[in-house]
Amino acid sequence: MASAAAPVRVSIIDDHPVVIEGIRAWLNVEPRIKVSHVGTNVPASMSNVDVIILDLHLDRRLAIDDIATLAGAGQRVIVFSQFTEEEIVLAALDAGAYAFLAKSEGPDHLLTTVFAVAEGRPYVTPMAAGILVSDQRPEAPVLSERERTALLWWFQSMSKASVASRMGISPHTVDMYIRRARLKYAQVGRAAPTKTDMLMRAIEDGLLTRDEVAEGFPLPAPATTASRAIRPAVAGSVEVKPAGA
Amino acid sequence: MSSPATGGDSVAARYASAAQVAAVVILLICHVCYDVIIIARSWSQYESRLGTVTAWVIVAGVQVAGSVLLLRRGAGASVLACRLLAALAVGASLVAILSYPPGQVLGDASWAWNTVGWCGVLLLMHRPLWELIVMQGANTAISVVAMAADGSMDRVTAGRVVLVTFATAGAQLLFVVVAHHLTRVARRAAELTLARAENESRAAAEEAVHSERQRRYREIGERVAPLLRGLGDSTLDPADPQVWRLAGVEAARLRRLFAETDDSSDPMLHELRACTDLAERRGVDVTFFHYGALPQVPAAARRSLTEVVLLVLASAASRARITVVGDAAEVVVSVTADAPAEVLDDLRSSLPVSVVDDQEAKQLWVEVRWRVPQPLSG
Image (cartoon, rainbow over all chains, first blue to last red; front, side):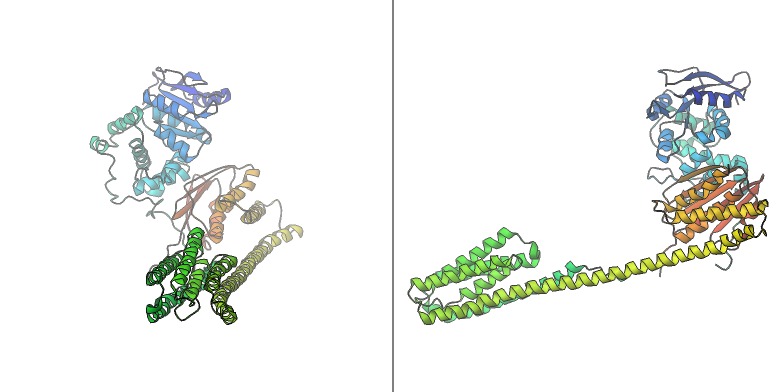
């Protein structure tokens, strides 16, 4: 955890000053975060920041390549965008971004995302969870049933606590399923130093073993069959059956 | 629907194919049986046996090639190939005539006229009639010129020529004309059948649309009319929150009803957006995310799925989040909102889909699923 002595240094890159000011205002309520750089363009090199909040739409183009360049230099990028299309979000994550934050999710999730990413942990917002759970591409990693359930309900709900109570597990375990699903995405697609960093951090956290990372991602122990279905019926949910149907 | 899978063209093609087989068989009998008998019987009389055999072989070759072309390609056979083969047959006719005994162009030893004429039928059956007339004309002209040349053309012979022309060329042209006519009639009949089936299915569709309209009208009458009547005769109080909610729900249902008749690439999402409209106008902050390719959801199932969203939105105080996730097999619709759980009380007993609700921190979280029905096996 970042200590009060060493605040998280954040860069905000957006070609709209009003957006920069908005993000700054959200971050300013948190003394453990310091906005140390703002810019309208991706600078050639940047070394003295922990997290970069990058608008995906710079100069009327999608900055996917900029994400790849920054990720290639080991920079932790949070993409902040009004675009919420599947292909764009998946492309940004594939390019090595740690997190994708829809503008509508800013107020609720920006601070959590910044802290998670500053510590080297990817963060999945509810919108991104919806995209991961409905990813039907052939190259999509295979997720376990519980990972899919956690993603789907996180996408739908207000809090991980409510997902946890519905799944009958702890919020920490919900988070674990979501992170494991996200880390599977770090193991497919193009290589990036940031993806390796995420996996190393997951090993440190005890979320993955070195062997799991080395040999690709095996299925979690209880689920012997992984499913592409959205979610099988989960015990513990209250199902109201139609009367006389 | 009673739409016949075969169109007018395929019925016509069946008739054409029968005529083709008939032409192939007739020519086969003429050339392989009848001509061989004539040639064998008159073998000793031919001026040139080599010429006779050559002509027979050429006609046989034309017959085989023409039959294959006709049976394999039908009307699609190469025009050039058909015309060349027809010309070759007429050439064989000339070779045969030159090998006949003197003065026997129309005698007991002659065989080629009729057979070459049938070759023309075989090759030019699907071509405009004039092509066959030209070919038959050339075939007849060769014989007439040969008779004139060897001096056998007298009045009796001329009479026979006319008779033979009627009997051979006439019959062959008639065959083609009748075949054409039959094909045309068959196509027309099939087209009429098809058109009738189309009319019937259109009438059925219109009937379905009409009854669907009546259903909507009934629904509005049953639900909206009492509300309006109540407001009109003051039995319902416009200041009562329950009445607001009822009015809001009915307004949203009307909105959805209008959206149902819109032409939209994804009716499910379109109708959901229609449901959100009124809540947004009330100042509810609605977010709407949908991911995955949704399957085709039938109208009745769409109504059930959207009904949940509609009821929750009508009671949402300030914010609502709608999500839709789908794949080929299932659609999952959810809504979270600051709404009371009672709004779903009516629904629980009637909704033909599963509802999962979770009341927490004055937030309602409802999930509705619809699965694409699996085809029954066995």
